Image (tube, rainbow, N blue to C red):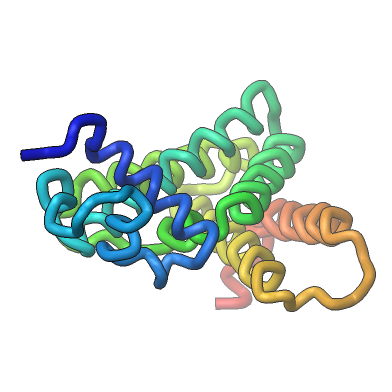
Length: 194
């Protein structure tokens, strides 16, 4: 019988706290059970093992990332929206390093909930980038580019890779400006580079 007050949402939130504090690799069923003061078998009343928990964490992380980026970009247009979305992405990765790491997981075939959560983030980025007039393929390349920039920046920062005494937010702003300049000319001479 499930413990009163213990539900899937509570488990996911506790696992997210563990991931942010100790790293996603430290999120185990034993660690989660200890945090919640229950025996590990009790968790199976709410989740489908460690793999199921990691999937739920990834969905939760993507939903939180979407909420942060959507709120930041709301009412903004063009370059301002790209900057706002980018700053929200980096802010989320800074505030929730373990949960952020779960958002990078590619869904397994048939995992519709994880696909939907990732698709929602993708659609938001495409919507923000639509002001640049790229075709469908160009949009996808632009999304890949922005995601690569933001993840690379987040990973380097999280691992202590920015050791110079420069303001990271200024670096991010300059990086996004350079990215925007690049996507403005994506259609110009793109075939020459392929």
